[in-house]
Image (cartoon, rainbow, N blue to C red; front, side):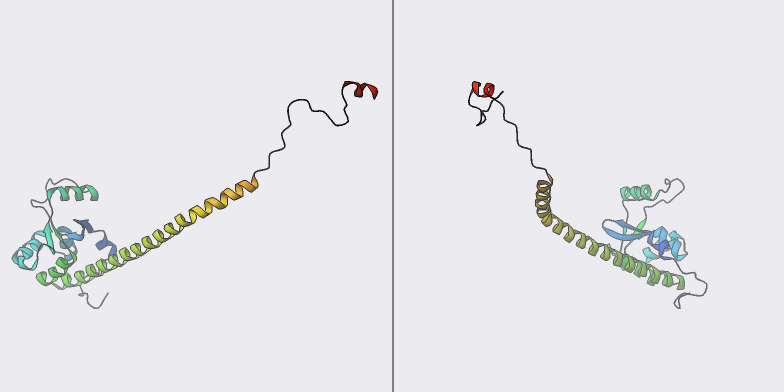
Length: 191
């Protein structure tokens, strides 16, 4: 167990955090229900703590999902309808908002889980950077291939030309006199 984790707290695996990070409005966010579950508190209590400290959560730290966004998210994650579920649309917390949550919740578990969440965000950012680098390399290879494509077409055309056998000489149509033939009597005299 890492030294910063409280004794009664199990470490949160990266996969458990990563699957709860969503891309909404072009930002990586986590929903209040997922955070409450990771922190080991009720969603209602997490949202109450946020509401008591609303000045710490500007729009770029936290926002409430629109009904259409929540419906899309439910469809993507395969969760059921709202029957017996929440009355309000969920809050989405950005990385900065999640960092602010640890100061609002003030529990050892919240602090420990926040450290793991921050590491997950950093690791995902690193993965995205490596994907971007890979995309740049593929694009460079593609440009080279396009430039070499014309050269390769010319090489293949020359190879095809070399592989094509020459056409045999055509037989001419019609009668042709041989130099030894001197007309109709010349053939008869040879017999």
